Image (cartoon, rainbow over all chains, first blue to last red; front, side, top):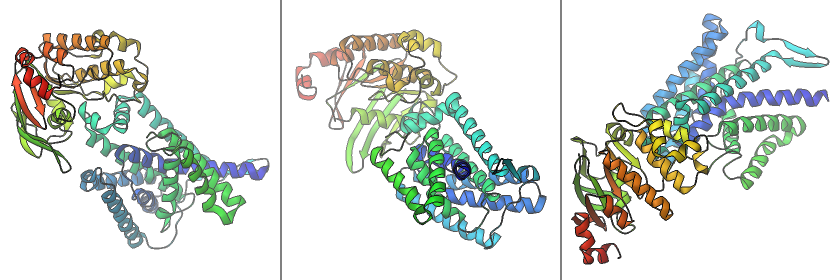
Length: 284
Length: 230
């Protein structure tokens, strides 16, 4: 029983991390149809920037803020300089974003070297909550709380504000959104920046959990894409459910059938796509 | 207020509009007639900026808007009721009205468009995708009015509607005209178009083949038989 509860908790907390990464990816995917291969790089760079801030200042809070902010600027620059010219050209987008992912990967190697690091977390977030025989690391609880807060803010913004309605209108029909006067370029840039920010936030948070190391970007990117594909492009609810599913599947898969780990992740994805080609909450 | 000068519009290699010119002045209702596939919708798309012409110019309120993104053209005073309604299905009726970007000019507000379309008030909290075809058409018109246009582009607003609703749309167009709104109306329903328009153009194979007052077209059996299938 203890095994199941603690694995369940691990799965949920990994799912929470995935949601931070995949929520923005899903919006970008659903709204602009951009398959953003750079999304993993934002995650990686966010972690590294935070690491540097921690080294210089010792402040975890400042590291979170500066990590997310810096990467949002990187995202805005990339979108403005390249991606907005490539709307509707999937191949060009994939190649461009893949190229950036490789550049950022090498840049990180040059700037931060090849050693793995862990972001040191404040004392208040370290240690464990002990319940009977079970240990729940406080930091993992913190990740779940952050993900829930982000999900709540995103949901309130998307469903209950005018700007949220404009974003949903653009997901529904970008051409017609322009036809009612919505500045789709501006909205797209904002969503892209938001996605980059959340990915960087995920990277910072993950830095105190799984660490920051070369290759973390391409390691986690497939997970984020599985979440988006399973949940349905452009759906926040889909990203949330998909993240939890992938987090749990991955965790239980690795715990119970370690030799099958990728299989336990991708087989359910294939099954879901066979039944619902647009994902659980996606639209055609 | 609108001048279309010799525009050529393509979809890929297909040369759809082959030199269309027309002009209209403030307060006018101009009808665009013609059979399916003759370029009527492409003309609307070219003016609003969904598919910009490769050659020729679109001039609106003395500004060359040919290559403008649609949202800029809307900000300048174009409004669009597109073919197939294209309401935002996942938004509620009220949200469909609220996302339209309002200009400072003009009289249209949410309460006022709901006065024009009382049905929409009852449906305010419904998802637009769940509305009937007629209600979606009303919503598409209401949404376009929310941008407070000076020139409204309407692409087959009666398509697929029951006769009673066709009359309703006709009444709305008449009342908008009475308020002085300029309307470029693409319409398959000839009696309706002839009743509301001040001037009509007939399109065939991407060219204007006939332009006249509505009653002159009504009397011209040859044009009607050749280009409108009557």
